[in-house]
Image (cartoon, rainbow, N blue to C red; front, side, top):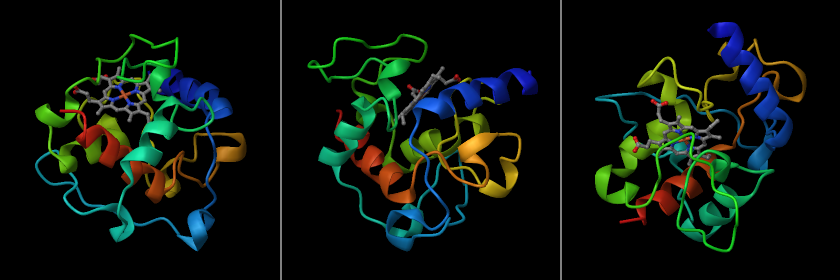
Length: 153
Ligand code: HEC
């Protein structure tokens, strides 16, 4: 299972945009804390932008969320069905709950195939290549996605 997961992460990694530790305007990795299956505080205290989040969700070099999720982004023809549809996700979950699901869905379901987009880079040493020591998305990108998904009521 672990091997399978890390291989998938590697494959996905090829199509996701890598962030160095000091990417995102010099923003280093910010540790986060999980409580009640949620992350209350914004990563690095950043403010998300829903418009940027929407673009990122549809970008196959960004979050690539559409590869697995249906979302109200009608101009994109392909929406995957591996994950649950995200229509109305902002009505089902708080921003804090959405944040954890993007940051590290494995905290909720250890068997999930959804990549953890902002896990501690020190624990991702199984990922090869350009993602070694990096998170898949920057803290700002995660917060932009949280802002977008929260707006889907
Ligand atoms: C490789 C496929 C895949 C990709 C890529 C992916 N997800 Fe997921 N996602 C899933 C699956 C599968 C689940 C269901 C959780 C589980 O596996 O238990 C899920 C669950 C979620 C949930 C919780 C939904 C709910 O109703 O419980 C959110 C929110 C979410 N994903 C957001 C995102 C965002 C935002 C992105 C892009 C940054 C993304 N996902 C990329 C597969 C994926």
